[in-house]
Length: 334
Image (tube, rainbow, N blue to C red; front, side):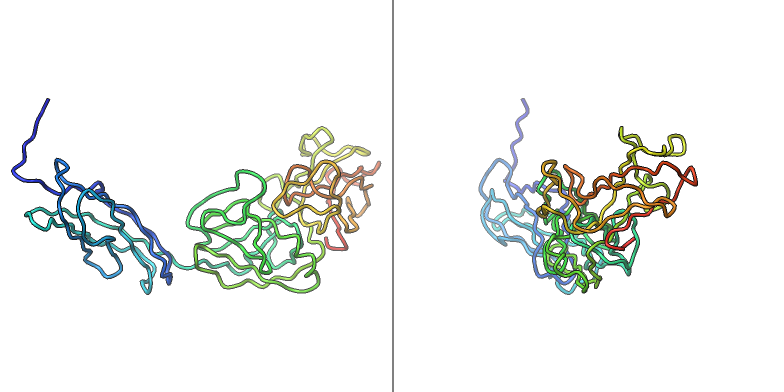
C-alpha cells in the first residue's frame, strides 16, 4: 500500500486533450465535458478561462468536483483547424491545470454539378421519379459515415437530412461525399415539372439542386455496381447471368433496377415492399433484347426492399446474339 501525503491539494483534470468540431457559419456551439476534481477529493474553489474568444467554459467558476463543458462556436471562423488552451486555477491555492483544445471547422455541404444521379446507372442530369433510389455526390454532405440499420428507413442519419421537393427522403447511407436515398412517393404529383434536392448537414444547407421529375426514370443495376458493364440480371434460380453462364432462349430471367415510378398498391416512404400483394408498376413496362420484345411477367417492387424494382420476363425463343443488349422501357423512358 502506497500512501501519498501532499503539502496541499491540487487540481485534477480528466482529459489530456479535447477535440471539437463545428460547421462554418453556425451559432450552435459544439461542446464536450471536462471533469474538474482535486487531489484527495478536497473541495477547491476554481476559475476557468480560455485563451481564444470562440471557446468558453461553462461554468467559468465553481467548486470541485464538477463536470464543466467546453463549448466552441464556429461563427465567422473560416474552415480549418484551430487550437486553444483552457486554464483552470484554484482560487485560494497556488494550483492550476491546463488542457489543450482542437476545434475543426468544416464548410457547408455542397452538391457537385450533376451530382443527383440514379443509384443504378449513375447517369447525371436525368429526370427522377417517385420511389427511385438515388445517389447524391458532393462535398461535406455529412460529418460521419452511417447507414440505415432497419425499416422503416430513417429520414435523418447522423446529422444529415435530404429534402426532395421539400419532403424528407428516406436515407439508406450517408458519408461526406455520397448519400443514397429513396425519393418520396409524393414526388409522383410533380411528374412533368421540376423540383429541388437540398442536403442539410446539422443546421447548414447546400444550395438547392434543380432536377426534372418524370413518371418513370428506369436504370438497371450492374454487376460491378458502377453503372457500367454487365447488368444485374439473374436466371430463375438466382444465379447471375454472365459470359460463363449466359442467357438461355425461352428461360425466365429477373432484371434488377430502380425508377419504375408509381406502384399499385403504393409502398409507404421508407417501408419495404410487400410480398403479398405485390406492388406492381403502374407504367407500361417493356423489355427489349436487341430490339426484340420479351414477354414481361412482372414489373414492380422487389419484395422486402425499398427503392429496388424488378422486371421478370421470358427470354425470346430465338436470339440473334449470345450476349444481347437489354433495354428497359417504362412509359417510353429508356
